[in-house]
Amino acid sequence: MTPDPARILLVVNHTENRRLLLEHLRQYYQVSMGGNGQIEPLLDQPFDLCIVDGVLLKQYWQAIQLRKQQVQPVFLPVLLITHHPDVTLMTQNLWGTIDELITKPIEKAELQVRIEMLLRSRRFSLQLEAALNREREANELKSRFISMASHEFRNPLNLILGFARLLGSGRNVTPEQRIDFSQRIINAGNRMVTLLDDILITIRAENDQAAFNPVAIALEPYCRQLTEEVNLSVDPTHPVNFVYEGDQISAQFDEPLLRQFLTNLLSNALKYSPADRPVQFRVRPQPDRVTFQIQDQGIGIAAADQPKLFNAFYRAENVGNVPGTGLGLAIVKQAVERHGGTIELESALDMGTTFTVTLPLTIADAS
Ligand code: ADP
Image (cartoon, rainbow, N blue to C red; front, side, top):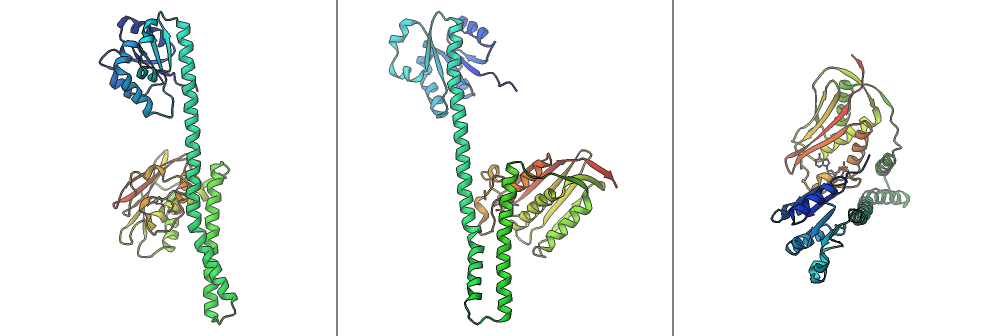
């Protein structure tokens, strides 16, 4: 893929000079330009380099400087075209605004060299910023992991240690208590195993090592049974309602991944909505794709949280005491993308949430 041409903003007062520059520059760059009175809106548009002449610099230096400050630490270069005598008349403010100058009459080759040097510095600064952002994201991930681990590992571990000490203390423990304590230790251990499995799934999928073995699955009976399994494991007064809209089909899916993302979405819908609000699971096969829609009328997700929800260990502000690790949706996203599908969400605080997964369909067999 060839990179997009750099965007140059031409802020030149003299009409004929502007036309000549435009004619030359637009062979290599994407150029936008304006004369007096048309500059401010152009400065709000994205560009990689501004070429300005002395007359308009005196008029617009503040607006240009403001723009440079807004995008810091990314470097937004400004190249001044000037007559020699102008240079000595420059005030400190004007000097502070520009990064390079070229004197008239302009040599095309020289202009090109200066432009390219400035654009190269800009590219470096953009790369540096991207690296900084990656570093920032990695740090955020680390903080989220530590905050999750400190709850989710510590609670079951404390429980295991507490009950194991009781059992080993030689104190009088009835046979019923012994069974109860052992069961609690096993449950806490299982929670930790599930958590570790989730972490490993996320890391493995991030490194693209997750296996993908599609097999033919009869869509309607599979989803119906999965709903029943989810319903058996939760509060019986808060079931998922299953709706299937379309023909009976068999299609190719990776079964463990399909199960993973559907159970995660269904159990979230139940977990984050009160028992008296129904949860609906709607499956709609179409000729070339299938949509799975999971809709609840629960606590909803604030708009500010929505873009970050699929990041590992991220939890929204409004989860309150609802337990969780913030791993489920990261796993869902990976499982969906492994199928070449997409996931969207619509949500409003205290109104509810709808997740819609769309997967391309490879029909295995019409039944
Ligand atoms: P968790 O283990 O915290 O449930 P997930 O990765 O499954 O982790 O979800 C990430 C976050 O997305 C949750 O902590 C919660 O803030 C939000 N979330 C997910 N599903 C829903 C939903 N159906 N309703 C409201 N919030 C949700």
